Image (tube, rainbow, N blue to C red; front, top):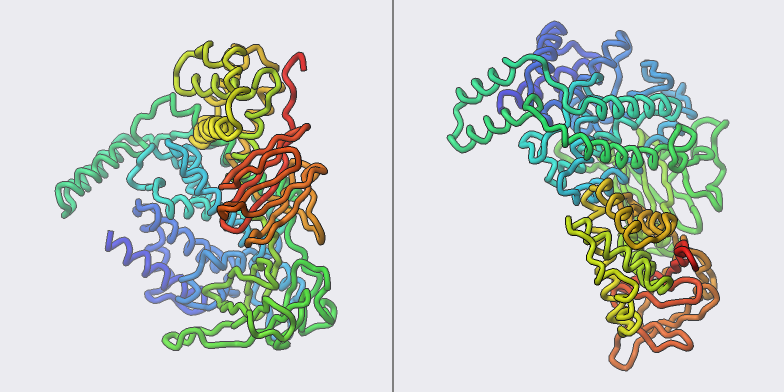
Length: 616
């Protein structure tokens, strides 16, 4: 392994020479021979990713011939940060061009690269969030499929099998590896806007091909034997050698069960839904469009120069050498060039972002950007902001206050509220109990889910009933997180048939459960006065610090205040005060009010009644 690592590092240094326009040490023939050897011999997945990253640079330089491509930072420093600067290699319509000389730069391209940088940063952020969700699947089906898809895309051809569960080579159970896999997949989509539709189609096609044949065999039965024999000759301890041989024997060429294909098909649906959610509609997906940049502040030329930042704009592009500070959305933004590391003379930019009024020095956030660290997150005037550096140009984008961390709890609250609906003798709660019995592999117990059994729900104290319904919601969400979507749907169908409920009612509840499989944000309404929640797709966010707060939900006034013991309570006219811990549901005539709490944040929402069962 150490020899492979040294050869990969040597390959990267040779490519760096070629990328700078210099003759690689040992000549181009030596570089070509080394490239062929590494591409054919190296088996380690992490090493192969480094090789393919450097190989893309090599191919770009070879295609450019007399116009070597220069990565930001240059040389070995640039190679250290390849994954963060791949967008520099993808010029319009895939044409590799020589760098534009001083005074000839195309500022339309500058804006294009900055927009791409903002979009690609969001791709990586969403990929890391999604990896945490899919890590909860007991068989890691979606991550294993994503791993094989990424490998095939990097190779440019099919052939990588979906790795088996607990595969020693892929190690997908480790959070950092899972995040790296989805990050690599996101980087496959990190191209310029004009290239994205075609690239997205290539990814979808590769995914379809992989689902059709998830376990391709190499066709050479001697390959695995040769690898096992080589492992037996390695100077390794007996335990390590035994683990390596077992992993080789259970690798892609090992026989696979046909029963694995059904979970792979389900995983493909999850992966496709994720891809559709991050690809803009203009490129064939369902996600938001690329950020808009109206011009370039302090630009060299006149055609795209901004005289001042837009007062209501959500993003801003700046040519940093042209100025020192500006005022954006009533907040001061200042910057200056700095030396970040005296050891290797790394230079970059220090950006100061005001969190108060203009001229205020009491609250200032400091961010440092460089070619090695071109992306950062900070705060501007109390709102999240993302910064992206490209050469001497910087883009800032105000991020929505999404409170993504509250989304799972808000979904649990909505599902709990639906289970508490009293219609048809608590039909939703009985449906959830019957579905849970089927998911555990048991037959449905009529005594526990009959109409007569619901009498105990009506008689139970509100807090006891809330706890019981929440446990039911957590059970369904737990099974959904395991990725067994087909089993989940089958259990709901069995429960619906047994209880003789409508398909509409069953599907409404099931769809609410399935929403937990994707990363979601908490849509927050903005209000200058008392916030009013009018629909199930919005929340009012209150910061409770001891003083009473008021919110309206579907016209009903709710007050949050501390009781005599110091506990936070929700008070609504006509109902007893209810303690707000981390989750509370309060009934309303046409649905329920939900309250979730995390520290001083309290999100208040509304869950409308789901489709009524027959006869209602």
